Amino acid sequence: MIVRLLAVFFALALTACSVIPRVTGEMDRSVVGRKSAVPTATISIGGTEQRSVVGGFCWDGLCADPGLWPSPRLPLRTKSPVEIRLSLPTQAKVRHVEYGLTRVTVDKAVQQSTAPEVFYWPSSTPFVSGVTPVSAESLQTWRLELAPGLYFLTVFAWWTGPRDATHGFLFEVVE
Image: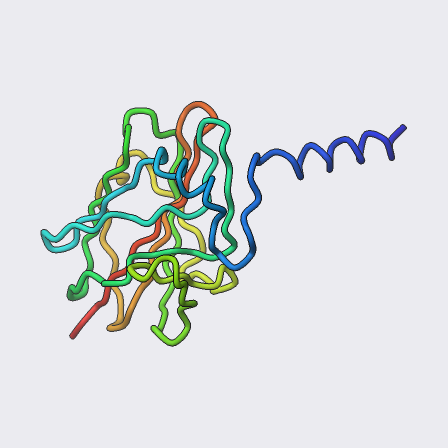
């Protein structure tokens, strides 16, 4: 009986997402077309805005996990301390937010011919500070002391209903 329950559990877990993209990070055309239904987030650093590139998500019954973390190719440039203002779609319905920050170099990006304006980063790249929950009070703006370098910011957000998405950003701290 336990073996049968475990088999059912794993079968449900494996089919929880309706689409399983290839591990290369490129998504099947049917996912890409419907992925646009997942709204992007925006960060503002030093008065300049950047729209996110949506990574893995589950949104209204469509789920995808590309296996790589995407970000815009062109970074925002700033000095430390970095003040990041985050704007999430349908912010009133956000249940929980976390972020991970990774120091990267361009040579570690995985190039994808289908998205020349996007960098893809290996999901095995460790976060500098681990994954950090963002409280409701500091959801909109937070301040980070960072050394000069290129940083990939991943924002994990969960909304009410069956909705979650990762949002990738790229910024460079200069001296």
